[in-house]
Image 1 (spheres, rainbow, N blue to C red):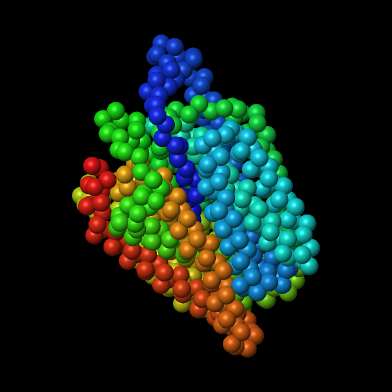
Image 2 (cartoon, one colour; image 1 turned 30 degrees about the vertical axis):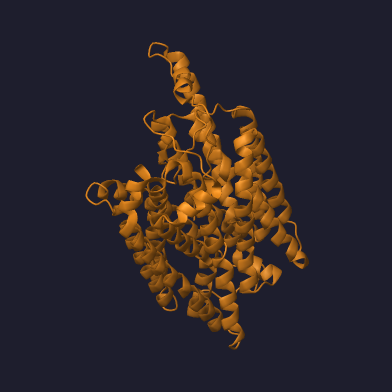
Length: 492
């Protein structure tokens, strides 16, 4: 899921002052006091931004964490329930480029503060919506998507400007690690509050309070204007990799091209096209899993007789808590393992990156399919295979963006990232929750209403994810056929 969501670039200027700026920032070794002061403040600013990023992604997954209660409260079908996350992602996707444009030209602190305030207020307001006004709840999720887009697109650029290249990589890695951590904690918080209070609405009242604290910290600790160390294009990957071509004095600047010319050129870049389709498959599977797994596990447990059908006001939410923990653990481990595997295997095989992605996608698809097949008989095995499926999915997040960075020329990277974000969200995690839901609805409509068919409908619709995962592996395998050629062309 996770992640290309914070990527934005700075427009290439006519003048470069990175070296000069860096010279002013760096102090001589004997001035130890003045050197340590700004560094500590920079780390404090980064900590505030990481905290806000944690809340940002916790808020994303409040709905999946209390999905059973929300579906029962608003009396939604599976299709209508899936539409909740689709509306959120679509609004996020459409708003992100707008905030990226604003962040390049106006005060970033004000935009961040306004975004945090806006999504916190809307989330809090959504906790008071009555069951007869479900359409307002849908609208509120779309507005929250717009608010979170303001943060995800701008915060990484501030961190990138606070640190020089060595430390910058480390700090961005830490920032992006909070994506799986926040996602998992969103499930845990939502389910935990529903269990403690007996009312799912309270989950939507905690993150706004945390958002209020983030806003106060932002106002007090983040400077009104952050010095942009370089206005040259920077591409930031989820693994913290940074390519800054304009910072190297030996790089020859090519003639400016139009946006349409860049798009046509990228369409001819086979490594970019196939890897983007692979990323889209990853986003499709991740989006479906994030939305539907707790509900699928609940229906499996009902069929097995492990838990009774949820007829009371608050449903058992232990599945969301467990799945949240799995998401945190596999997300961190997968990102770290993927980056390390790529670093080691690149030394012996120039095609290592796409081959790692292809292998992990196919293994993930196999694990997910196995989880679906054993769900009706062994719930523990289902949890285990889902965990392995998520782990191998997470391996790719640290690798796939790096592929883009070295197969696309620096002057086209901003456009390439924007196109990849658009396609992967539109055809990936924005579509899959709703698609899984309407397939489940169609299966239920053709059969007698029963708990058994509620489970089977979700099981059969979920198999789409396994096949999409296999196709994603195939797309990455095709990438490996062209990656060496496209890399050499991009380096020219």
